Every structure is written in structure tokens, then in C-alpha cells.
Amino acid sequence: MKVITAKTAGFCFGVERAVNTVYEQIEAHRGETIYTFGPIIHNEEVIKDLEKKGVMVLHTEEELDTLEKGVVIIRSHGVEKRIYDKLNKKGIVIVDATCPFVKKIHNIVQKESNLGKYIIIIGNPEHPEVEGIRGWAGDRVSVVQTAEDIKNLLLCNEEKVCVVSQTTFNYNKFQDLVEIIRKKSYDICVLNTICNATKERQTEAQRIAEEVDAMIVIGDKNSSNTQKLFEICASACNDTYYIQTLDDLNMNQLGSVVKTVGITAGASTPNNIIEEVQNNVRIIF
Ligand code: SF4
Image (tube, rainbow, N blue to C red; front, side, top):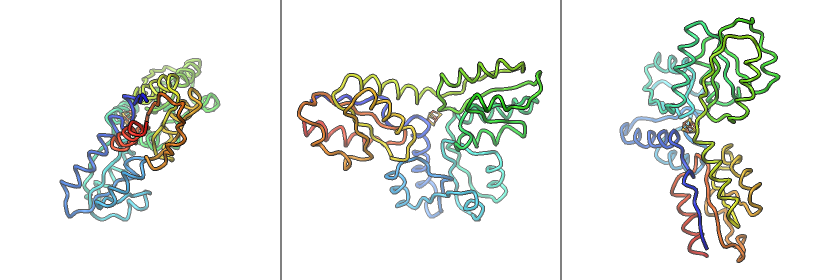
């Protein structure tokens, strides 16, 4: 049995940095309550482990509002400027684990908005990363994700516009939408702020899925990037399995005709889970 594990499987740079930050803060702030604003990662195993170590998740802004002390860790998605202002006013310690690629977008939209430009964010308006970016862009900002959204923009023709993207937005779709915006006669500057980590993971997963007999995709059931990875692998390899941990994998499913198995994992899957699956698949076959 040959097992091929994707080099890009598991944590991306920003998620790894955020998770490590939480573990470092547990050591640095012994005796204090540590909170993350939203789950630090879409992975039940990691969240349970952090809970055992006393880290609490604040799920809503209302919960954040009730805090009087403690340490609040901002996750890799980042948050609106007003959240920093609110926590600073309360004197709560902020530990910022915003991914530097996302922070760069905050800085761009803040600077361009201060220069008087209208900000257009290409992305999903309900995604926390986009909500965060929007919160650094001032009052003159729109989020678009379809041609229809662009049609509905009510800006004057010579408006100075700065266009940025959600980091995980599909590159081809981004290009198509930028072309539509260009047809309006705005004075535009476009900054491609898409992060390559997602694209590289998907490309490698597809390449492996095309050459193996069975493919295993590991990740939390609520992780949207793992779901997307599963779709890509399933369309390239009929024998594709979506598991959260080794316990979900029925080894009997991998029939005796299977000679090669590929493994990939979403951005929120820890290395120990990937290694456990990899080692067990190797032992059994
Ligand atoms: S996908 Fe890219 S931008 Fe998002 S957290 Fe990972 S490294 Fe940062």
C-alpha cells in the first residue's frame, strides 16, 4: 500500500500562528481567564483541549460586552476596529492573532479610506473576516460577491474606488467581478489580497486524488474549506472519504483492490490527527 499525504494538508500559516498563540498565552497568563473572540479554529478536538485548559470562547459581541477583566485573543480572521476600541476602553488585555495577511488588508482599507476613496470588498458579507475588514474601511464601503451586487452600487462615475478581496475568495471569480467593476467608469485601484494557501491546498489535493485509488479528506464537519476540499477530491476520485478523526474511518471501506491512498486535510486540522490517520492506514495495509 502506498500512502501519499499532501504537503499542504493541515494548518495554514495564519491558523497555526493563532493556535500557537493561545497555547503560549495559557502559559503566560496562569491564573487569569483567557477568552477567544469566536472559536480560534473550526475543530472540535482543539476547542475541547483548550476548554480543558481553561480557555473560554466568546460567541457573540453581547458576551464580550459583559467582560470586566481577562485576556481576549483575536483569532486569525481579525475583527472590526471598534472591537479593539471597546476592549481598550474596558482595560482588557488584547492579544492579537489576526493573520498578517488579513491585517495587511485592514491597513490598506483604512489608509485608502482616509485618502477619500470608496472601498469595495469582494467577498462574502457574512464571513467574519469580511465583517472585520469592513470595520476598518470607514463609512463609504460595500461588499460585493455577485455581478448583481455590482449593478446595485450607486456611485457617481468618477468616484475614486479601491477594490480588495476576502483572502479565501476564488481567484477566477475575483477577476470576473473586477472586470465588471472596471466597466463602470470609476477611477479604480485593485489590490489582489487573495491568500495562496487555500488555492495551493486545493490544487495539490486534486492532483493526488486523480492518481490514487482512494482519497481521505480529514477535517471538522463544520469547516467550509474542508467541505470544498472534499468536493474537489470526490470529483477526481470516486472512493473519497470525509472524516473528522481516525475513529470515523472504517478500514474495511478501503477494499483490497486499493493500492494507493491519498490523504489531505483542511486548514483547521491539527498535525497529530493527520499523522494518526496516516500511520494507521500504513499499518493496516
Ligand atoms: S488562509 Fe491565508 S490569510 Fe487565511 S489565515 Fe491562512 S494564511 Fe492567513
